[in-house]
Length: 110
Length: 117
Image 1: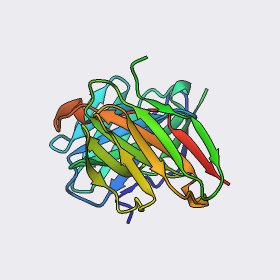
Image 2: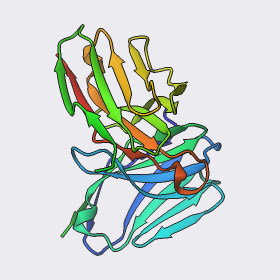
Image 3: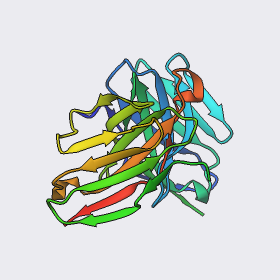
Image 4: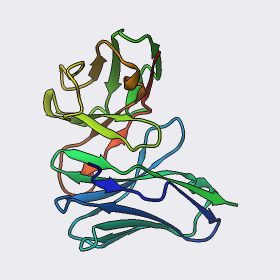
């Protein structure tokens, strides 16, 4: 039973434009919501997080939005840069466990 | 380098053999996680340690899998009688204790890629 879904396996965006990555979940009990970025042959690296009591968190070019009523999480990257090309995973945390989505491969075209 | 390290990076084995992987977390982190990742999927939780205590195990973790963290520092993951379905990337992550703020962030190692022939 997949609790976390990233329905877009891939996304291509022109450099300088906005990238929007989406994540949907089914369990309302998650406490924290995180985004990780993964380059080939490396482990995921933390990007940004948001707690369940907030609806927006911003860090430079990266903004995470949380819509609890829709059980929807999104990551906005603006402006997108070629170095942002990677696989992005959303991860949801509750108790002692993290639940990861299947990932979205972002390609930023120069 | 004070990040999470994993050894070996790659392991090729024959079906039925036992394999053991090692993870060295960031030294001040008392939480350690093992994940398995297959192609096209996100990391899948296997087990979790707080210091030397194994507090959570996924129901996906069969009896052939065992993990230890004897002194609350490094951890090992052993797979006995490997099967072809065990072929995957095995990731280790560590985090400091804490449930609020950025303390819930995990730091991942580069992973061990297992191929079972």
